[in-house]
Image (cartoon, rainbow, N blue to C red; front, top):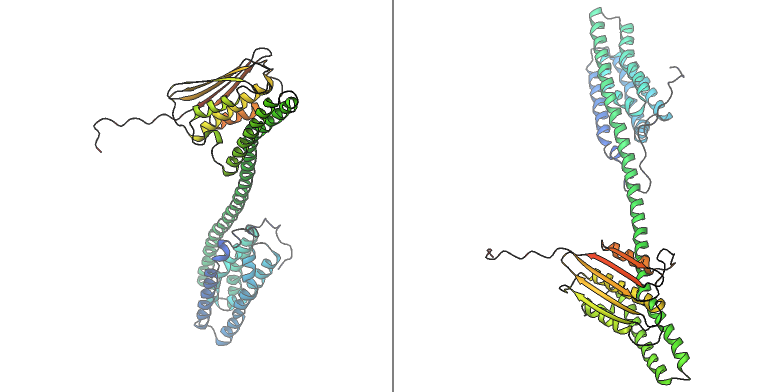
Length: 426
């Protein structure tokens, strides 16, 4: 045979990803039927050879040569079939198998039935062009050699040649189908590998996104609770330091406030760790929690003293805990900013409006105001807007230097349950 071979085409099978869930694909798991098919065709061909009308020496020669095909398949061919197409070993196996098949098929015509086992292997191991070349040899060469060796009559040559042409056409159709199946299987294996890689990437990104969201949530919680509490403690310490020598009763009063603030901070820290409701909402309604918050901002040192009023309109009712937490944190953040920046004598008003469609929270102060377009560099306003957005709501901050500040948050509420029709059956 010539050493000049067609240019190799890309392999049609892909190896499954190492370490993945699909280390053994359907091709490998379902290969035993091919072993059984080869064995059956090989055994039937030997039976045909024994029953052939040729002389005993011819049949013995063909029988002996054909016997070698089985160990060649078991020892070498099966491993190449498992490995995939167009390897150098695949070419060696097919060439040797053709060499073991053609001489017996020339000597005994019944041996040609072995082509039914070899033709599928050509398409499983070779590219389409090489497979068609090998199948042409398997179908044509035995008939040509048989005609030249035995010199049969024209009718026998015609029918054998016709059978070879039909067999070649059938082989081409079967082979193209086999190759399409193998290519489709390889494409699906690649898609599955890509899908699994995508799922792993999505899972990783989701975990990172979840961790980032949790860090942002904890940052807002700490800013709205512990950080504000520590800020109040620092202001109280400064007030006590200035009063120790000239106003001892005032210093003691502020020390009591420091102890109360520290206890509230401790309660908030425990609530954060346990994932429970804020301390102000624990066992209290939202209006009550806001009144307690307003009372804590009452008379005290100038740095933390703000007169706060609370007004509730609409039918107050229990809402989802997450909604009440957002409303409470909004008021905490707004009043904390008022206490730090509004100036002495500032007043603030909290308006809590319930309706069927939304909960509206407004906090207005009479302080010095600020430029809302200036970057703040903190968590306050950005955290306030983020909390409202998480609930599907909106937050608005209006302020100008010398004109006070208005913080307005609107949180949508689910529609109330419809009352059951009067007189409906139980």
